[in-house]
Image 1 (tube, rainbow, N blue to C red):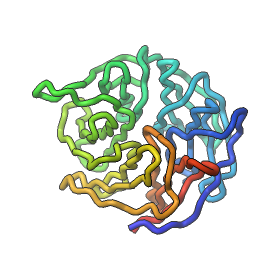
Image 2: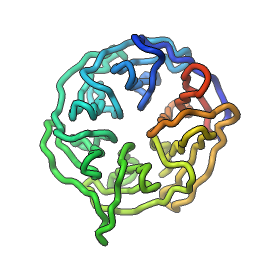
Image 3: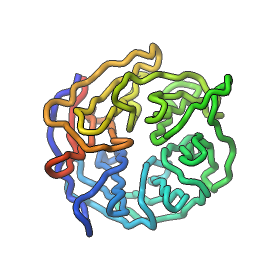
Length: 277
C-alpha cells in the first residue's frame, strides 16, 4: 500500500525550457541522483526539498543510471555510444572515465565488475566488463523467439543467490529475469495496455514496475518474482503524464520511501514521494 508523503519540486540548472528526467537512483545519503536528458546533466537533489546539491554536465544526453562500488555511479549516453562513470563522494559530482560501447546503450545496471547494458539497435542485452570488453549478449530465448525490442530498463539484485538481472521491455510488454551469465531464467508478462517502464528492487523478492503511456493515469506495480503475481499500487489523483518511455521510479530501503517522477502535461515536473507498507 502506498501513502503520499510529499511532493518534491525539481530545482535543476537549465538553459532550456524545463527538464526531462530519464532515471534516478537513491544515493547512500538517501538523496537522489537524477539524469536530465534535455539539459545533458546529472544532478544530486535533496530528496526532501528538491534543492540542487551538486551538478555536472555530460558530453551527451543521459539515459539510465546505476551505482558502482567505491562512491561511484555510471550513466549511459546512447547518442555517444558510451557509458560515463562519475565520482559521487559526499554527494559532490565529478566526471571520471568513459567506456566506449560502440552501440546505442540505454538500460544500464552493474553486477560484479560488469555493466549489464540494453543495446537499442541490436535489440539485445549485453554484459560488458567495466573496462569495455564485450563478454556476452542475449537477444532470443532457447526457442529462437526474440526477447527484446526496447530493453530500456535494467536492474540487478544480489538479494538471493545466485544474483538476478531484470529487464523491462516496452516493446514486448515483458520483464525478463536473466542469470549473471545472461541465461534466460523467467519471463513475466506485464498486463496492458500500459507498457513497463522504470523498475527497481524493493526487497523481499519484489520489483517496483512503473507502467506508463500517453495521456493516461500511470500505474505502479509490485511484481512478486517468486509467484509472478502483480499488485497494483495507486499513485493517487493528478498523475496524468506525457509520453515517457522508461518513466522512472526509485526506492529507498532505509526510509521505506518510493520516488516516482512525474512529467506533467500542464505544470512543472516533480517527484512524488510515497511511503510503502
